[in-house]
Amino acid sequence: MITHVGIIDQDPVRLITSLLDHGVPAGKMIFIGTEAQQETYGRLSSILIPRDIETEFFTIPDSINITTLRQRLNELATRLKESNSEVWFNASCGLRHRLLSAYEVFRSYQWPIYVIEPYSDEMCWLYPAGREQQQVEDRIQLTDYLTIFGARAELPETSVPEALNQQLWDLGQRWASSALELGPGLATLNYLATTCRKEQKLDVELSDKQQGYKELALLINDLQETGLAHYDNGILTFRHEEARRFANGEWLENLVHSTVRAIQSKLPTIQDHSLGVQVYRQIGDREVRNELDVATVVNNKLHIIECKTKGMRDDGDDTLYKLESLRDLLGGLQARAMLVSFRPLRHHDLIRAEDLGLAIIGPEQLGELEQHLHTWFKAAGGQANRLL
Image 1 (cartoon, rainbow, N blue to C red):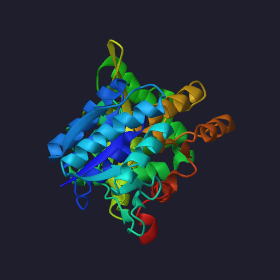
Image 2 (tube, helix red, strand yellow):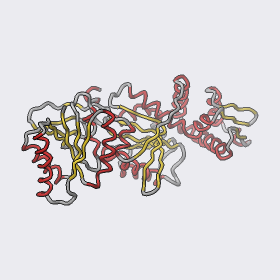
Image 3 (cartoon, rainbow, N blue to C red):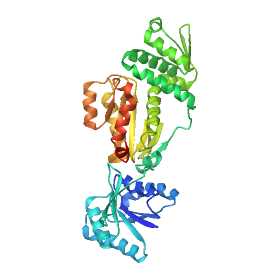
Image 4 (cartoon, one colour):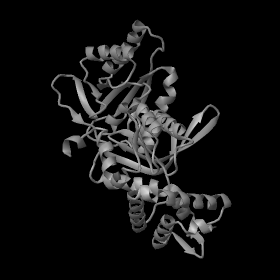
């Protein structure tokens, strides 16, 4: 089998994705890195070993001393040559001085050298000339991706029955299509569901004024028809905690995730997705938890979608900066993030999101959510752009 060699850097995803492709022969992966990158190596190794790919960590000096670096790389190349290993060098990652030095060393042995092109996700051959490029299979899973960047992920264990899931999706689409008209009513429903959470109960009494809200009455009627709530004499009772959370804003998260599932059948570059991912990162002595409303991997790139049913007047900047930070921390340079907002966004928020490289779907676009998400996922590149 082939021994692959690559250099660890801050965004080492492309050292992994080619090895997971069933059409790429791989028996071993040698990761080149400094002592400080041992922890990253451990995370990369934990993904490959269960897939029967042997791993090794080869240390290089941290100093910018090209002579010493080349000597060390020549030691590795000599050992591989003496062992009669068939070697492929993955030149996709690494600081420039390390990458160019390694390229020279491995090229002198006439070993094949390739890069994984970020947008198309194709394996492109730098040497030998004339070798045909090939699409890398989209096989990295969500938990693998987060592991690479030092995060521990917990995916939800409970699954909604398909029949109920279809009902919830239909309900969410109906609410989203009337986002501007139903906005005040959904804000009130959100408030009532929040009141239940704070008082740790499933029933809440509507005020006389709330009982007169036409939009709220429509929403409550939808909940009753779906079997999620009961309403009688001004008392709204949620059937269970999941129903309360649905009314408390999770309906939008459910809608987005169900839409991603629907798009997956048409867009083969969507390889994994999940709703409500709990992500844990170790910062010093403490573990920090974040929740990703919807997370998916498209064309070997992490996509994070934040769903917001409340207005952003008080915490708009915080929401956007947090989303940008999570994208960069959990997904590296190729990751992408989007905010889906049920409430209208201020011009200031739209400009800030554009500056941060975040995609936005506002209430005006929610009626065509599937179309907008499909376009966004296609922009991640990959084989689908040539097929669709």
